[in-house]
Length: 363
Ligand code: COA
Image (cartoon, rainbow, N blue to C red; front, side, top):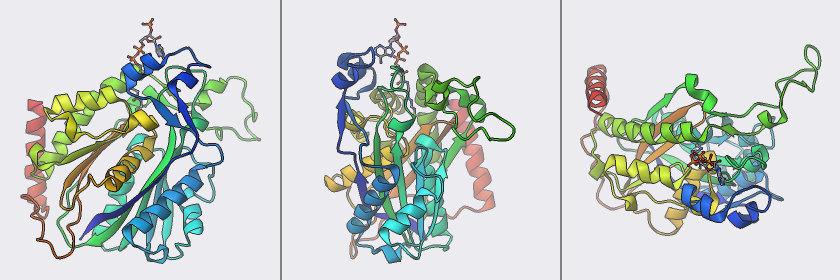
C-alpha cells in the first residue's frame, strides 16, 4: 500500500504586506528584497490563527478530495508557530472539522522540513496498514516569532497553511531520504518563552535578550547549507528509488528564496521550469510552503494524474529531506508503471547503501 495524495487545500491570511510597506519600518527596499530573495509580498495574520488556517486548509483539502471528515483516521499538523500548545493544533483541527474518528498529533520543531516529515510519517502509517486516510497539514504564523526590527529575517517570512489528503491505495512505495545535523543548529534558532519556571528561575530572566524569542538566523550559513544539501538529498532519493532526473515531472521545493531554488536547479542540471515557485507572493511560510504550492498547482490544473513529484524540505535543526510521490491515475486509466522499483529486502538495502556512498564520493 501507499499513501496517495487525492486532494489539497490552503488558507492564506487576507492581509498582505508588500516590500514597500515593510521598508517603512525597517531599513530595506523593494529592489533589494526582490533581487536577493524573489519575495514581493507576504500575507500576515490579523484575525486568523495557526489553528483557524490549518482548519480551513484541511476543510478545503477534504472537499477537494471528496472525503468526509468522519473518514479521516489521522490528522498531522506540522507547525512551529501555533497559537496553542495544549490541546495540540491537530486536535483543534479535528474539533473544527468534526473528524471524530481521527488520531491527532503535531509535528513541532521540524520547521521548514515539517511538511516533508509529516507526509513521510502519514505515508508510513498508511503503507503499514495502520490507517486508511490521513490529513496532513502545514500551518504557520511566523509573523508572531519574527523580529520585525531585524531586516536580515523579517523580509523573508510570511503566514499561511496548506493541506493534503492521503488515501491508502495499491502501489509501490518510494522511500524518502531525510537527514538532521543538530551540531549545525545554531544557524537558525528561536528560544522558547517557556524555558523558565516560577520556582528555580525567575520568570523574567534578565540575562535573556528579548530578541532571542524571535527567529535568529545566519543567512549566509543557511543559504550555503541549502544549496549544497538539497541537490545532494535529491540525488540520494533518486538513486534509492532507482529513478533518474528525467522521471521527475516537478520538483516542489520549500519556498525559502528564489536564488536557492535556482541554485538547486542549476546544480542538478535541471530546467528551472520544473521548479514551480510562489514565494514571490507568500515569502517563506516554513512547513506551509510546500502544501500551499501543491494546492496552487493542483487548482491551476498543472498537476496531472500519473505525474511524479519530488518534494524537498530544508531548514532549522538543521534538517533536510526529499520524498517522491506519484499522483494517482484516474480510475479506469492504465495502471502506472512504477519505474524499476522493488520491495526493499535487507540485501537490496545493502546494495542501495553501497550505491549511495559511491555516488556521494562522486558528487
Ligand atoms: N535590506 C537591505 N540591505 C540588507 C538587508 C535588507 N533586508 N539585509 C542585509 N542587507 C545588507 C547587509 O547589511 C550587507 O551590507 P554590507 O555589504 O554593507 O555589509 C549586504 O546587504 C549583504 O548582506 P548579506 O547578509 O551578505 O546578504 P545576502 O545576499 O546573504 O542575503 C539573505 C541575505 C538573508 C536574503 C540570504 O542570506 C538568504 O536568503 N539566506 C537564506 C535564508 C533562508 O532561506 N532561511 C530560511 C531557510 S528555511
